[in-house]
Length: 313
Image 1 (cartoon, rainbow, N blue to C red):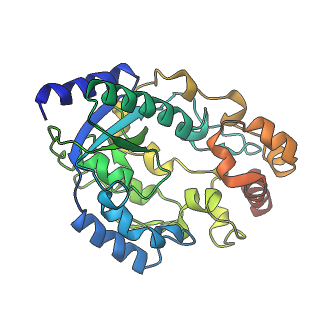
Image 2: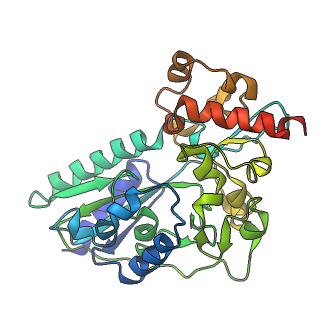
């Protein structure tokens, strides 16, 4: 494929509002697949059984899009400077969920990008993903040079720290491929030390069973009593490992209005979340990532924090 096509695609991605774009060769992820297999073998994926079922597809992009030759990866900055409340009566929601659901925004932009690509190169077909299929977003972002994998297992970019959403388009055409970046975490262990539940059991390995983000979003059972007192009032997700990262000095405020915080999401009252009706939940979190936890999960999280005594600290 002519270099001009690669540049054209990248320019259009930036024009559509993506913060970074890179391109990787679509190929079997041998090393990453081996590490994933080891991670699954230790049961670090907790109850996320779909990761076992989709193992082969996660490793080989041609199993989800047989014609795949290139992976166009994009990142979109979502950071906003508002701070979490110190009020013990207020819960904490991960920064990524303050605004509109990123799946909707990213998918819409990627559809526009794919439409542009097929109009400029009619013989090309593609398939897009935004954290909804068996495609390892973080791995491809690293392979495409968007950023490197931090020790907290979030992708870190030079320009925006780790406050980015990721997505990709698999294309059946060869493009010019970018080189992965050097891992710039060095000897830093800030994220590992700061994790209150010690979920980062070693650099680049997170045990979901101990992770506050997993427990407040994906976990459907009762919350573990030994970990609950360490939640620090988080009721949906957790930003601690990202907040302490030294690369945060490069964070920039997002230009995407859809990611601006809804004021009611920054510091919600724990008692209000705990007693919320389904009707109010559906209204409050319309077009929000928080719907992933469901009303029962969010109420469970808020009640757990209240009962653990954290709200009195």
